[in-house]
Amino acid sequence: MMQPWNFLVIRDIEIKRRVKQEFLRANQEADRVSEDERQRLDQSLTSEAIEQVPINLAVTCDRSRRPHVPGRHTLIDHDLFVTCCALQNLWLAARAEGVGVGWVNILDPSVMAGIVGLPAGIVLVGYLCIGYVARFTDAPTLETVGGESRLSLESVLFYDRWGNRPPGTHPDERPTDNA
Amino acid sequence: MMQPWNFLVIRDIEIKRRVKQEFLRANQEADRVSEDERQRLDQSLTSEAIEQVPINLAVTCDRSRRPHVPGRHTLIDHDLFVTCCALQNLWLAARAEGVGVGWVNILDPSVMAGIVGLPAGIVLVGYLCIGYVARFTDAPTLETVGGESRLSLESVLFYDRWGNRPPGTHPDERPTDNA
Image (cartoon, rainbow over all chains, first blue to last red; front, side, top):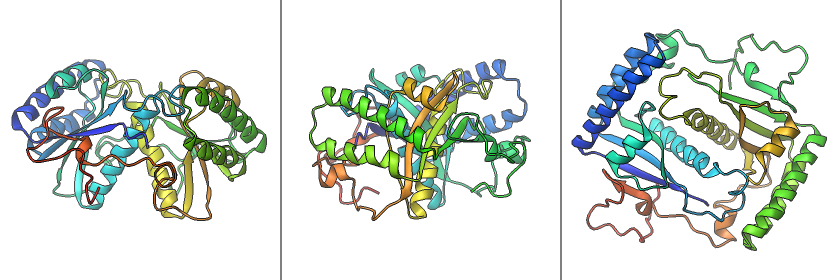
């Protein structure tokens, strides 16, 4: 019951344009870090999406909302983590309604805080573009076009202790069913 | 396609007992911080659950897995956040299969790292107890027994800029439908 989240529904075209500009700026920086041509297509689509979708949604975490919840002194980022769970619930609910969601993660948090007026202590956890889409793809673009692949379930699974795999498993073998 | 997660399936009773001990220790500390009697019932159930459920699951984030993904230099915690989304997907999938999940957040990450052998750079994002339950409640225990209440949707919703509410909304009014 910590509920540290806020949802900032952005429909104002001027704010969307400022966010788009920030995305383009941060993306140029990202290009210098990662020279991955395959991801540029995706990023050009993202830039258009920010302006064109009906709703941009900033999901934030208020780090001071409930400081005395048990566990806050040990797992101090738990408030951020449950905010991500709320974001994912929203994402899945949207998808179930036929609404597309895209997460824009190439944005500088401090610039964003200025654009939408976030006070100190309010952390931007996710910035989402939300709208009806022409179609849903069966797999991520980075997989179908970009040549990336999903990690196999076996490769990310350990038993009892880190690094411990059951005898006979082959971490590089792709599973037939990821469920 | 960052996929920074690992899932550590803990079935070993000795490891469960060490985690339970760590929970009890951290919980004593938490009691000193928060003297909330209502939450003690919940915590005593948690302590038993750690030992008795068939599976404890540590969900971790490998912070070095894909350092060059675009956006990593701006939203540096994005890898932690998508790991939380994976955790929530697992939680909802389990629930849909009639399997109960409980998140234990009163644990010291460094003690936990020692118990399950996490190397440096591997962050414990969530520790879950997973098992079939006698029944699912309609509302969280902290709401039905603890007297806590959900925040209204209106109270956490802003438009275009932080703090901006549409005219005529009353943030303290409970909504009839939180969907």
